[in-house]
Length: 240
Image (cartoon, rainbow, N blue to C red; front, side):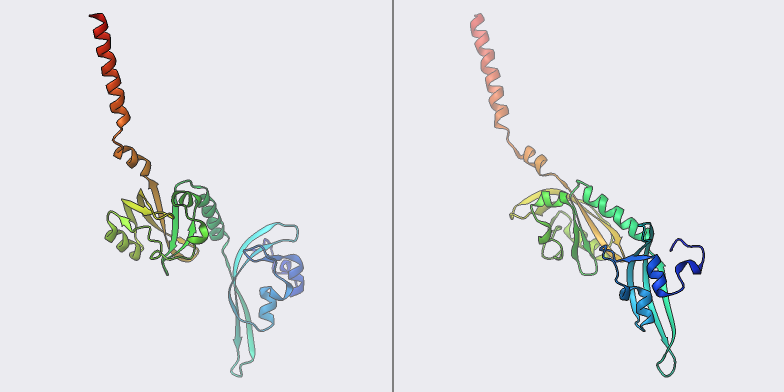
């Protein structure tokens, strides 16, 4: 996990370790010396789930780790054993980054809700363009406040599947947009996990332009037929 071959290569002291490895939080903020997991556990602090990116001072990245600090005491409550428990989370976090990029780049409208509290956690540009919402108006709101299944043709089935964390089959729906109007769409839902959170990915295909075309009586086509018919009679009269 550190790209070394022996324990000695990690450094003989905490300060030596800090000089060999830079740790950053997921927001790229570098840890100060007192915030390194080793510093915290040596100071007698227990902690859970500190996620850090490990790299060399030359910038070479060695991965992402989830670290817990465990302090074991003797019967007199004096520190007896210090332990750092480290899990390699590189593959999982890298997969999440790839998903984030693909989700953001996908032109198909989509929004993701966390199942534990039914709140929206991610939305892509396609959904914002379809509905006219801004991201700040959606993230953190619940599916009850902005109900993307409100006008679903099989709403009861869709809601049942949502609460069960199961796949929501494709169905026609009327999606209410930011200005209060509705757009006809095909909606579907696919369960997935983001980090350790169970979520539901809602996707939409816009049928509104097609519906408008189907509902259009096309008076222009009738006018064209009339002009053609009139032209034919005129030609006939001329020949006579």
